[in-house]
Amino acid sequence: NGDLEATLSFEKLYNDTVYRALALDGTKKAISFGFVDPDNKAGTNTNTSLKFILPKVKLSSYEPSFGLGDTATESFEATALFDATAGSLITAELVTKYNIS
Image (cartoon, rainbow, N blue to C red; front, side, top):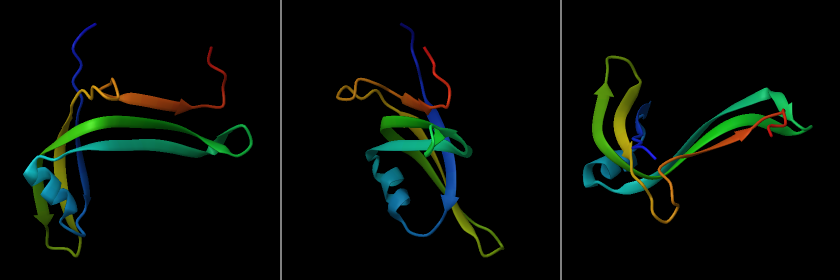
């Protein structure tokens, strides 16, 4: 077993102060994100996909961006922490149209 560190950064449209508050007060939350391919099905109705789940993440920085245009964004950096309850730092779920044995 070796050490594993997972960090992420993301940018989203600014529409409220919820994420800003989470970043500033050091709240730990779960984050999940994924990728879906609707053109390739696993079976007849299920889209193939890849989903990542980080059960315990601490937002570590926050930076708003109010440019000259109409679009305001906010950027975040976060670090995944080991979650003893879930027993993991990060998990991945793959739905594919191929049988993997």
